[in-house]
Amino acid sequence: MTVAQVHVRKDKLSETALVEVPSGELAEGAIRLKVESFSVTANNITYAVVGDGFGYWNFFPPKTEEDGMGIVPMWGHAVVTQSKHDEFAVGERVYGYLPMGTELDVVPGNVSAASFMDTTDYRQPMSPVYNSYNRLAGDPEHDPSRENERMIYGPLFKTGFVIDYFLRSEDWFGASQVILTSASSKTAMGLASVAKQNSPNVKRIGLTSAGNVDFVEKTGLYDEVATYETIGTLPIADTVTVDFAGNAEVLGKLHHHFSDTLKYSCLVGATHVEARSSIGGDAGDLPGPKPTLFFAPDHFVSFFKEHGPQEGGKMIAANWHAFLSAVEGTVEIETHSGLEAARETYLAMLNGDIDPARGVVIQP
Image (cartoon, rainbow, N blue to C red; front, side):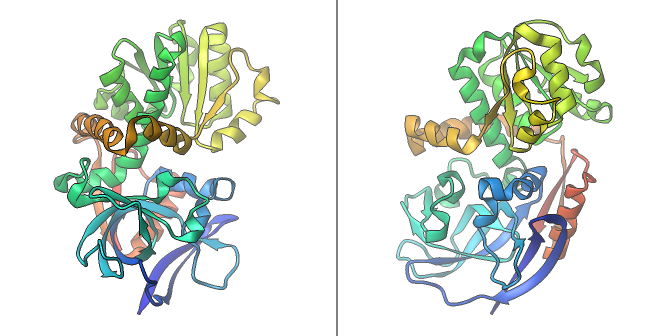
């Protein structure tokens, strides 16, 4: 038996290969998952771009001898095809972190009716957020008719959820408005949706490129939509910025425009560290507060420590279902078969050739 995988060169992300490797024997206490489907989004490109710094290449090491290659993680659904674990039967379906490939072996631990953790040795240094899998039969988030939307939006929505949770816990740093760059991105849409539900008194302003204004306005998630060219006309008020774009020039303009009225500058994604450092020197030279990197997995660990997995899961699920209703029809979902389609979609996403109004699901 063989496993198909898409390998990516870590230091040249446009170099890819579709390979087959031996499946191997299933270990005691493990289960074998056949990958049913996953989405390819800009989030996966971030995993590749910052893979070495944040350990994303370590989740699914390739079973080949070629150095310098890695497997980009995906979010999707899988089914148990072989089990050496008493609590799992062949045919059970799960949702979670998967390789860009056709198969994955995991060793379930901390098993409950709704979830389990993969306790495989090499995955333990990484954040538990990525090692947790949902058992669909007992999962409060699962909707059989919305599986595609969950793959496309789910991980990004959760990042938006925990950003909102953090900002609310800080009373939005006293701000009356929040400005979200890259407002067409799914993470920004997730944050805007949760903020609309939980903090309706905080004005939501979405910043986007001129070509995406219509799409962003149609989502109905923002009180106001503006382009990057019009930053200088934005209303002056106590403000929080959440930067998803990672554009040094945009970040600089926001800091200079709002200056002392900027109460908090939140950077989402490690690429923004590089963007920050390129603004004519250190970010501390900018007016207003120093931009602060937001690493969602650490915040999720704190969130679940505070609320527990069951109650925390219910809180996320409630906001998730409301988000699905809000964005219904805004993205046209395409389904493609085969790992070659996954490889081609990944390369198109890497080149920025995928319209935000398109969502791509792969059935490998």
